[in-house]
Image (cartoon, rainbow, N blue to C red; front, side, top):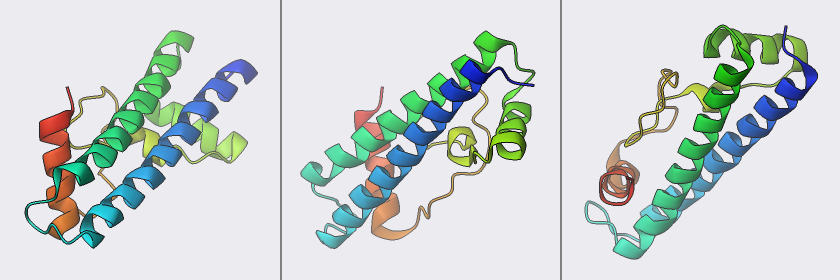
Length: 129
């Protein structure tokens, strides 16, 4: 069972992950629409990188909260959130290209092909630390 304050912290982190995923989708759509193709314009990469950083940071908060509260593991915490509180923590648990968040081991949910994949890959390799 998760304490109420833990649920609130985890839910906040999940919502931040969801918002960052939405921002990433929008940034990738914008990069694709600009027509850069295999060589996205550097100005298109900054919003992609910012969204990746935001998503990574929110995932780290999710994992840190789990660790700090003594929850057994991310999968169990996510299951408890979904079952008991209706919170889908999928975006908090997926691996993001260019990042290394321990416990984020689910498949990345976005298409990495074409111009969007190129923009994401370049943003991750050139802008993330």
